[in-house]
Image 1 (cartoon, one colour):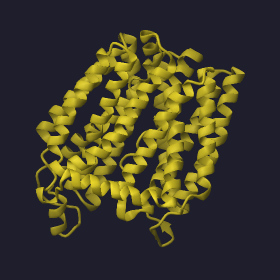
Image 2: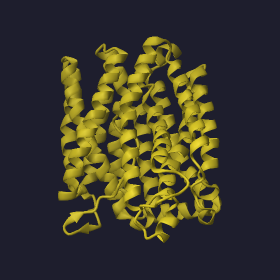
Image 3: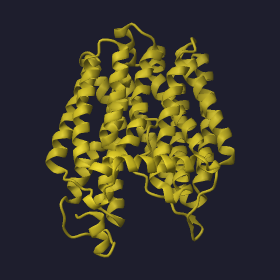
Image 4: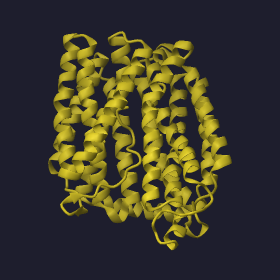
Length: 431
């Protein structure tokens, strides 16, 4: 396939007969790059109790390592976008993968939890480049129907990572120390580096590159305009609060389910496989409903389902019922989460069609930062971790419901139906 400019010259169909990299090779390389972020986020979650014991620290300090990664991802994506526009895709990607491998190796040998936290931030900031290049390179190479096929294929590959990550992590934890999880991720980073160096050419045409400083100035100006939009602010706030519900669950579940209910690391990994399957069901329901009733209605319905599910969770934890009942309530919360997130992203992206790149960055920051801050703060309340986690989810979900009262409607209706954009990734979610 050739780049998008050649595609447009050929008639804009997206079906280009020849070029520098084929469709299958692109999906292979970009799919591997898309794996790194979710795998880095989730693979070590079964080891939270073991890390706390090893470092002789508390749950809040361990959860801060998760926060460090998601904040690094948020900051990194802002900077990486400007770098790839200025210097192309290939060179910044290769250097960032080297840095990512070193940061991950640093996690494996970290002598204390604060060194691990710093290394996790570096992980997030460097792996952000892989996420940015994955989206940008696909857009450079393909257009129209071919681009849609590429994004859909990458999304299908990425959806597996949240289920595989905790499962692999739990098996490595059974085989030895939690540090082996980061050794395995380091191996993945090296593999991605070799694969990218061998198979991924430069995809950004030189004539389309801009100075990094100019790109950053333009981005900051666009951010200011977006933040002055009341509708966009409400959507971003609702999205951030909803994402915080999911990240609070991800951060607290290892302690609640393994220490509180006695699940083994393998059983915990299977719970997250169930979460991933639940999200697939939610995505199917959402895709059918959003085109009929609109993304705002589906998002509100998801929040209406999520609130009673989160309210039920602490009640069941306090009642000391069997773990199956708690998992049922959490599964309902995950299903609702899968309805809320993509539709709020759709609303945010459709509300500002002329500033899509900047809108995507700000929505990503809202997803990462609010949840990354909320999870460790909740753990510092000094009460039972299960009650703190589920109670915090209730508070965050209630706030999201209040913020959703005045959500703006979606633009871009065609023949009475909402034109829902293709969203290849939805940031952090309940994996």
